[in-house]
Amino acid sequence: MTDRTSVTITVNGISLTGLAEPRMLLADFLRDELRLTGTHVGCEHGVCGACTVIVDGVAVRSCLMFAVQADGAEIRTIEGLATDGEMHPLQKLFAKHRALQCGFCTPGMLMTAIDLVDSTDDLTEEDIRVGMSAALCRCTGYEGIVNAVAEYAGKVHGKEGVR
Image (cartoon, rainbow, N blue to C red; front, side, top):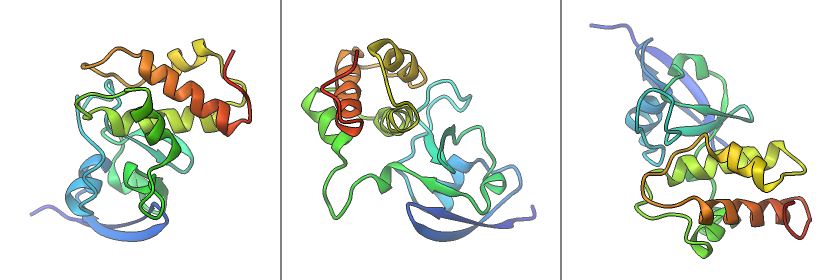
């Protein structure tokens, strides 16, 4: 029997506690222990970005972080984007620009984009393309994704669009 450690994290504003083996990944802790299944696990090597969540204000690959490392952290997942049953503005823009197809990568794409926009005041289209290259999609071209992120960045930063 493996020792399990109590891990308490604040997820989307709610303090949650679960048990984790020392080697349990944050992605597995969120999905299996806390039943927050919106964070997807793709490659399990930190390459695809499907498991991206925001930990203490920074986008991280939850498949590369141990749950015990997140003890005491504040985490934002895809489940925390909607407010009062209303989709987040970026989610609406992904739909508007047809920036998704199967949806598997979408949670990681959205979290990556939110971190990119929140951490950069003056994004260019090139910045968006480079920043979003951290999240891979096998179904669609990236035009819709870039367009959705560009429109969102313009709204967040009070600008007509990106350069």
